[in-house]
Length: 328
Ligand code: ADP
Ligand code: TRP
Image (cartoon, rainbow, N blue to C red):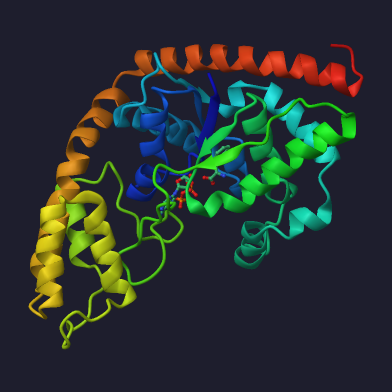
């Protein structure tokens, strides 16, 4: 069976972008592949979080993975820092990763701009740690959103380079995986761009009905079309895209027809959208809260996941050490 790996950094709660960009693929793939889904807590250290925050966020994401429907009997769920072999592979990959190529990564350049006082080596080598995460289980498919494409290219490059340097055909080149032809980009409702934590426009799976409604009612709109069938400007297109993601086709078509006939009432559309988002989030939200209250269960899942992933990682590291010329 082919192997799949993916992870999310524990920097807060999961939002609709994370769900439809990544987690939804996890849910489908767990039935068809040998899956490893992890919590990328080492990656989160680039922003120097407080230990209490790490503990809390890791626990939250674990509960949210489970509440979304990742089944620990089907997929291995684990915490990155529980598998120390990943750090060893990261070291080996870094020896063959070059400053120039790491500096050219767009997300690194963005960070240099946004946090000039904390341009640490972890940020620079983010792609080699991500590559280690993936190839340590010899994964061939990686479900991620569109924004991870460049990191995925680096992962393929590092896998290929290892094979070339040592003259082996050891690591497969991992491909990005998207559920649909086009990678989904869940939009923000604040006018332009994607939904994200750092964008400050996220609707979280844990948000209650009132919070969802207030966020959706604040969505940016305009004064409405004046020509029938006119093209939608970005804020409006985003509102429709969100509806396309969470509402039924009938609901979408209803408001789309209203728009095309210049009869759209954005207030009504937002109310409907808020209702549909709440309908989607409600059962997940309830499960998150139940699971968060069960420390014994969470502890068991983390322990079992650590054991299963460490086994897979240790096998790779034994072979890698031998290939490099170290005692196995
Ligand atoms: P955030 O934007 O909240 O910081 P991350 O960068 O930690 O989210 O992303 C975690 C996963 O969720 C990645 O696979 C990423 O591609 C996906 N993702 C995040 N936001 C979106 C979005 N708006 N649309 C689609 N996928 C997304
Ligand atoms: N870089 C990913 C993000 O920001 C998180 C991540 C770390 C990851 N390691 C990974 C995703 C390995 C897939 C595979 O969302």
